[in-house]
Length: 87
Ligand SMILES: [Zn+2]
Image (tube, protein in one colour):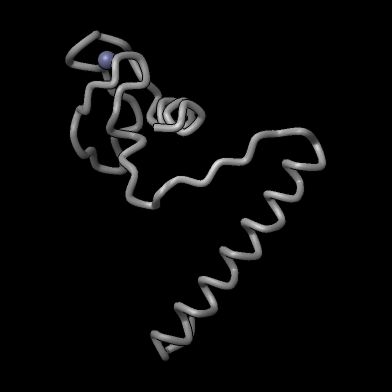
């Protein structure tokens, strides 16, 4: 890890930019949709079935049930559905 925080951030940003560029190219090559969302979008907090916002959850909470519609969610699958739907 780089001790200089500004340099570490620049390296990190460059890494993510390259990852994004390569992923976008692969998606285009294989006819897949590529989506970019805001890093603070609460994709794992929002029910993909009814849109209810269930609030922040700790990272160790991997599954949850919507208090509004009762749908059982895997945290990552729910987030992926929200991203696919455009949040
Ligand atoms: Zn719901």
